[in-house]
Length: 379
Image 1: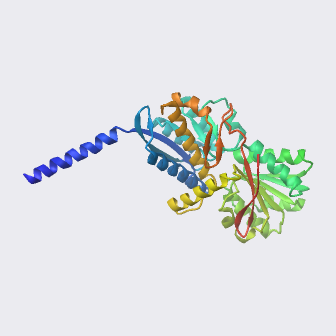
Image 2: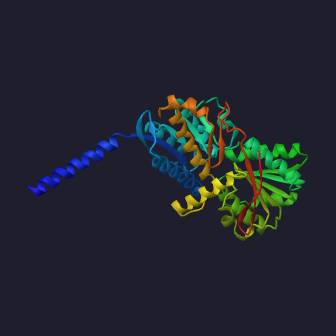
Image 3: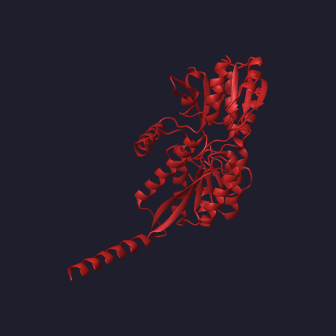
């Protein structure tokens, strides 16, 4: 008799748990980044930023339309490959996510954006900087960092006015991001009175740069700019050293990571590298960013690589729009997302009519003793 009663009590308890769970509305948010391949460390950094945001949202016990909600993260790997990126996008659409944070790369974000637009699903990229991403006329497309016009242009002017580059070689990896930031850098150098003595290209999978570096060495530049990612920049710096090229090395956010020093090893001299991260905080906002870094390390036993705080804020601003719209349906909260004025870890997030962040910041860095050192925040 006692055994039967215990079983009955257990069944009742399980039913109560199931009823409580079903009383919560589940809101699925997708994240896409390259968690395999040469820049998997950046993709995992982004994904962890999204996971931390989801955990924090669930800890708040939010209600939407009077009902308790629970957020779930659906994470996909696009391996920084456009075809895999569109396949991941379609998978998230089929899973009926309420929104997507991603992709990391411009080359995957741009083709995927058409899929999300056709499905009416908001997409916020935390790191895609190619201008074309938000210039396609899609009202579902947003980003929380400055674009390559700002990024490449600022670096180009800095190369001439601050680094005092007189002869500058430009290399890109032929991706949407790499070419875009290199083109803007090239234009800004020339506009500032600098001279581009050579334009070379490689790929985002290459490991041997001796041919293009030999050509560059013959032009004796005092600055080499690379449009691409740290996985390529590190080996390129090693081969520059082996050829005796002592030029300053500049690049955008793709190389501006904690991992670059490890990838370059002893080939990177102090203050040799100047790079810019799309984003940046000043004053009191630094405390919020530092606190985020501490929480992130405690949760994942890893330092922030680059964009995790921007991913975190992108998830948060999406959830904030849902709360203000009193709905997680994309068609219902999309308009509120466009009206956002949200203070996050990375600063104030508000979008213009293209979906670009207003008054986007850039942070210039160099490296000393293998550690990034901030030079300046510019807007």
